Picture 1 (cartoon, rainbow, N blue to C red):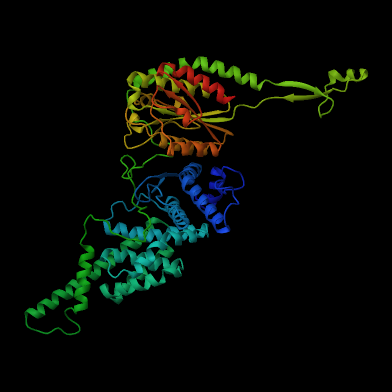
Picture 2: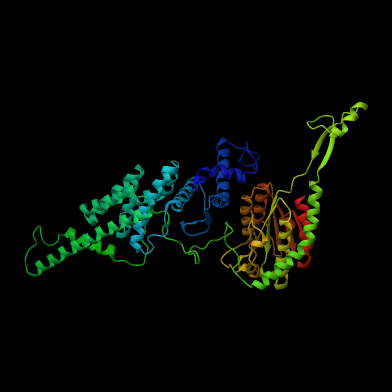
Length: 575
């Protein structure tokens, strides 16, 4: 399930390299311009640029292949047992690239080995201890399967280790969980790079809790070596909590005895009462069990993966959905059914026209030549008159083998009537495409607000490999013109979706009535075309000149002309 992590760099190269066999930049006088150092830096920057742009694409593609969804845009890395939520990288350098791989590897370990159904009723402290112990267990399991994972784990932890080694004070509960995680990882996973931090934390634990209790905690933490499941981890945590509760009760009893002796004017001896050290331990244990709802901070816990993210009301709001899971929120089923019915009628002419073109292109023919492997026995008599063209050569054009992704602008400027006609025309186009063998259509509507998903920039209506029949009428009835025009995010989402398709020819068809400006939008179009994706467009109205950004585009005066324009573009691009 997670082997893809160690093949990602090669796959990023395959997906996005504009020139097969090289990722050298082509600007500035060619790949050989400048000093060796400058050429190296250009190549290095290009690699990181490719990594950054292809990270969501490859993660989404391989996640689907492995049965794991990977979505970018959350604030912290986490998982709900089916989906890995990752932050979007703000600035990628070589170290950040390997840290990102380390986090992905860690989260995939949770997907594979962690049982999210146990430990649901744990307190905040218990949950933090569970997470610390489970992190040790799943990283040990990942190292057993993929020895190369350890390098990425180290990179994921390194940024905080030096900082923690220089930190002088720790909150008591954070100290406990950080000590459990660090000492267990250092000894069980043989991480020498954690030794300095482990020794520092051990000294602080002995200072705050005493040498005997620290040793007992360490022994329990190291017993995670034998754990085979998340349930085993929770059993260790329960033993550890019992140990702490027992120690707390014992220290409190000694403290009460000491107070009684002081009240009677008697001095404490070595066997009764409590020493100043024991009083400090009692205070720290009380603070440890002073449970509140605030999270326990553990800097080396690179995720919050045991905590199950609710599926119906996710806490992690994503910027752009790259897995196609964000769909229109159910609307008027009767309206959706009517739209689908009209779309089927609208698609009849397109289906007949396109199928006729397909048959013409795929029509088999037989030519005769004077060499070959197949004899035409009906023509052998021609040898008597000197004609040697008795060998058959059969010709047949293949199916289109095309993946096409329709981007439909349903912003508020489309209006109620225009939006209704646009969605019907687009659905008719998709139905027409489905009738053609070798065409793999999909459609994304933007903005997400037009589908009831106001927190999302785009919304997937039809994914590649699915059919229009699988779209629920209520979802079609939920689509209405509303919101702005996030064209850049829509183009990015279409590129990510097409990157997972196997078809040789890939097309993005942008339909919009909004203003299109250069800059990032032009750069996205150029990137798509360099990666082998053709971009076409239909501009509705006079908002702006789409041809400046998308050379292969048409302008129509109003949405009434959209259906005819779609049919014309379909015939042009498929053949």
